[in-house]
Length: 88
Image 1 (cartoon, rainbow, N blue to C red):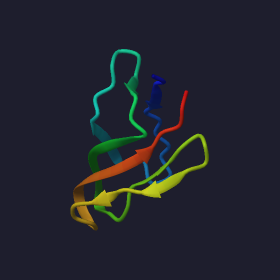
Image 2 (cartoon, rainbow, N blue to C red):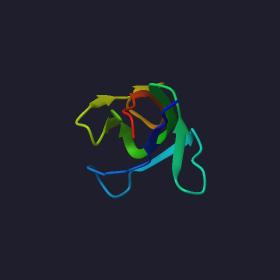
Image 3 (spheres, rainbow, N blue to C red):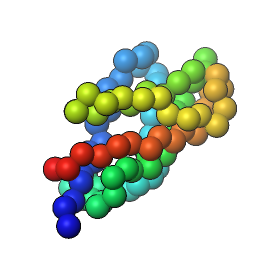
Image 4 (cartoon, rainbow, N blue to C red):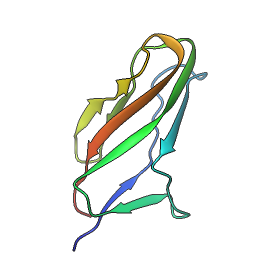
């Protein structure tokens, strides 16, 4: 079968004190996650002293979306997003 790859790339568009972490999936030593699935569930936390309103993602192929938050406008929240993967 063919393998899709997702790379972790962070682009910070907010203030310097924003902390975004990815807790799942854990990447291998190459920084990549290999899968044959068409989508990838990505989860983590976001922190900001005045609250986190949203976590957005975008892919190299032009796709983008907004992650689901467990508690919007809180200093720390958990987020999750199901990302569509392309072949590569």
